[in-house]
Length: 399
Image (tube, rainbow, N blue to C red):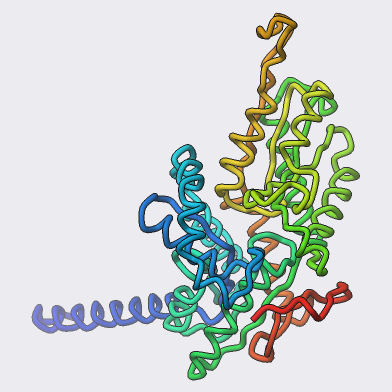
């Protein structure tokens, strides 16, 4: 059958228009996820200048771990800033760029991909307590994306008032300001004991250790497991994060028994005296490792930091490394001829690690099904307290 060329052109035009409309509809559907996974943390910076200044000021006003009442902080914030900015700038001048945000975005993309594999119409997001993108900025984006329900997960696996507590509080405050957002929001308190997380953590350490020292037996490799420390005032008040970290490290010893395993805390804000922070500080652990003759060392911080951060890049990779690599001196103060510089490697972070991302995606979906240590944020009135079965004195209150 002969079809006039003008008719054929019209038909093809209509078919092309239909294809465009169809593609547009698909793209719009893909751009409108219904389920959100908000990965949150204190955050970190990538540049100096205003970004660093705002980071320090916001952290002073909001950080639960700072030993000043909230009503007093606005009055002394300028003094506190001047007191800390010099030391902080010096640290960042040695480690920038941290690439923290790039790591966080890689993690977001990996979790989003795992949700897709599970058949979930969902998307992962990143928000920070103290720097951009702030949690409230990310929530605004999620609201515009049309998210119907979401979970906020602290990027470190343990519950602390200074981590999951602050994340959930930030979400609660945003939801109170935006009652028009008809959304189901839950906050995961911790996943420290979840074997999916622990296995992802242990396997990543073992994989990196063997890749870093491929010719060595496991018993000749020392592991330094470093994690975020806390002020004793918080742990004494019932903050369970350190106990959770200790429990995970005890488990790791049974999971990787061949390695020589050491533990240390990165008390990166601890200028107020070592006796006021949990111990052992990682620098003291490093001294012990030197005495024990550790020559091949993998430093890992994935227990509580999932992306590299000032604490891992300065406190661990500079301060601790300097101690581990400090030369042995002879009686004349010269480098002892028998001394050999140890081989010290800073492990990667999780970032886009597939096993870790899968664990987070599965833990998130389990929580939506009612499994895990979580709470409904819209029901939250006052403080975010650890649960279940953690001893928490009522005197420790977060506004």
